[in-house]
Structures are given as C-alpha cells and as structure tokens.
Length: 164
Image (cartoon, rainbow, N blue to C red):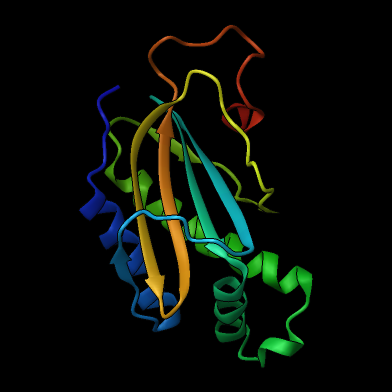
C-alpha cells in the first residue's frame, strides 16, 4: 500500500472542510480519552486500492454542524437532518482523502451511525493515519484505513469495501 497520511495532512483537510462548509475553526488536539456520545460516519474508497475514511464526532458537534447547514436552531433539527448533514460532511472529507490517493479510485456512499461503546473492528486493516480535532469542548477524530496487503479471503472483510 503506497498511501499513508501524516497527522498534519489529516488535520488540515478536516479543518478545511469544517471551515469552508460551516465557518467553524477546529484546532488539533492530542489523542486522549474524549468521552461523550459520538456519531460515526464512514465512506469507502475503492479502485486501485481499498480504503475507508472514518469520522467519529461528538453528537453535540454534529448537531451544531447540522444547525449551521440547515440554518435552523439546534432544537429543531430532526434525526434525518442530523444524519444527512453529517453524511455530507463525511462525503466532503472522503473527497479530500480521495484526491490525495494514488491511482484511480471512486468514492462510495457515506454511512452514518450512532457509535457503540465498543465500536467494531475490520480484520486485516492497515491504519494509514489518524488525528483528533476540537471545537470548544466537542471532538472529532478522523482515521483512514486500507486493505491492500494480506488481503482477506472473499467475504471476510466488512461490506463497506464492497461498494462499487
């Protein structure tokens, strides 16, 4: 696998999307135990390689983002608007990652879900980079993974890599 992302590259692209789309200035923070309720967004990138971009964001930051995008007070944002707006942000970040990858690749559709306490794992994943950012006391984590070396047997890896 020839793609790897420095923390600074990931910080810059997430900061860029949040700044342009929302007018919010995020700041990089150290990776710590940032507790709270999170929403996870993931988007696959397939083609020359197989990748996924994960965004884990505190629900309060997702709600604030939806409020800005829909130009509505936070207490008027419904679940569908919350998920749609976050899916669009995940799509934008995924597009930024896609632009940096070698070869010909395509972006899949974003998936948004409330994060569980224990999360989930993807067998044979290769971590390509991760970074934490904050807006006030709200956090977002970006992680890029790939599957290229040690390909799992057919059907063994998570379905997000099968979207084409």
